[in-house]
Amino acid sequence: MTILGIESSCDETSAAIVEEGVVLSNVVQGQVEVHAEYGGVVPELASRAHIHNIYPVVSEALQRAGRQAAQLTAIAVTAGPGLIGGLLVGLSVAKGLALALQKPLLGIHHMEGHLMSPFLRRVGEAESGCTFPFVALLVSGGHSLLLHAEAFGVYTLLGQTRDDAAGEAFDKGARLLGLSYPGGPAIAALAEGGDRQAIRFPRAWLDRQRFDFSFSGLKTALRTHLLSHPPGDDRQAARDIAASYQEALVEVLVEKSLAACRAVGCRRLLVAGGVGANQRLRQLLQERASPRIAVFAPPLSFCTDNGAMIALAAAERLQRGARHDAALTVRPRWPLSELPPVPVGQQKVTLVR
Image (cartoon, rainbow, N blue to C red; front, side, top):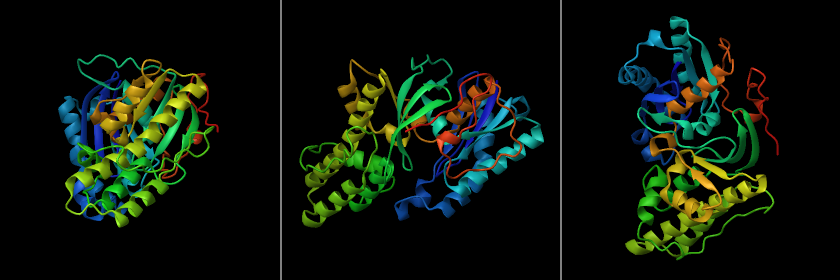
């Protein structure tokens, strides 16, 4: 089973070839230089960049994998959620290829792709050891949620952000600090050598019995602090602010995730998404989870949006009897509760609060 996966839901154009669960190629073309001066993703510019990048990215993915398009078993594409322009670019190319090659086409939910990221492995690599069930912390620029993944296609929503996603909080915090885009890596770099306890920024715990997130108040606290205590040319003061802000953000993610594991009685925790690449988040999870809860995180290249995770999710659905979807359309807003059922007698995807 050889799957071409295409991902274009936000600001990264990616295509990958996954064969029998092994990643033969995974090409990602980012757009940092396109959006840097705006401090965030501009949807119209992202769409235009996808149009420019997608054919070279797909061609390179096939070339690196050493496969011809005719050898593909199926084509998978992110159908949502995401920015409508980028989704349409990916779907248009995927539909054209599927029609020309007479191959099955599958539309994949972006977050289900991230759920599959710990199972990705390259040629010669051992399996990660992650198995269902697990609790998943999916954190990126557009999403922050906790899921209980009991099996493939059986997902229970435990909590989500009530306002800004974690990645958005990093981006906007970086802009307040005068740092470059993307904000997560910029804040993490500045936080090196900083005192994490220098400023006691607020932690939004909300209802302790629930697992929702809120980061809007943290951003406001940072802005208020900078107005009254601007670091100016004091580099150490800037490091302390960045380290304290990052700590406030990741500590809530960590504590909520571990509490969710305890609540559902799960001993495995997955962290994925762009923010899942944050080293302080990974470090704090390992410190506070061990030895009761095993923490799994995909390699950094598979944390951010990529075509390999889309291809692997499609392979799982194909193995369970999913069929070609000629009428596939994009869904910029697509709740996991509306995922199609997992075929062949498997339980329908569920999502409850």
